[in-house]
Image: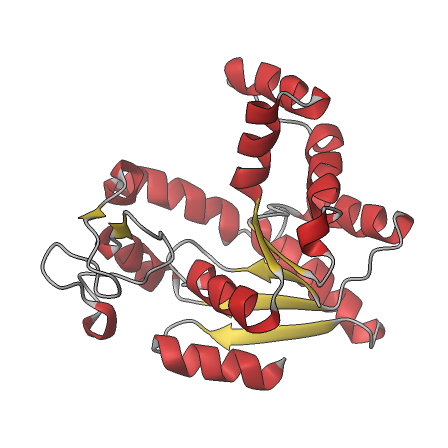
Length: 224
């Protein structure tokens, strides 16, 4: 099963992605990790990407998409993959779709987490990261996953808050890109939604991100 997962920061898509990874034995691929692995590994694409990053420029799609495709073709993706954090805009969605077709790689499902922008913002500011696993759900503003003091509710590990999770300006900037339905990330999601209307081989699933963790998981599994 090959999946692209969309959702704003704070929607819980990372947690749901981790659940799907374990349930279906597929690779959970986060776009940021692809960059880090290529740069750390000194690959040709990684070196080119680093040059742009060091200048403070965006890495062009001509580098990013081959990097993503290369990751999706690694051995741990043989049973399937879940791509999280890419594409970020409509142009990238179009290019990624064309590249997948060119490589003969089937896209089975696209998932969109629905969540009000203000709720997403509050969730981000309450989010706490576990030192052992960043996908362990801990949030000081959500009763169902409120941590045990300053310890992870799942494993007891130490918790911390990302600095940018406390920066409202940074959050608003990220969300402005995500919630843009003309050219931004939601436009990318809607590109695949429109494809699915005319292509029965692609399933487009929406989930209510405002619900509690178990409810969202149950809804997701039932729709898959």
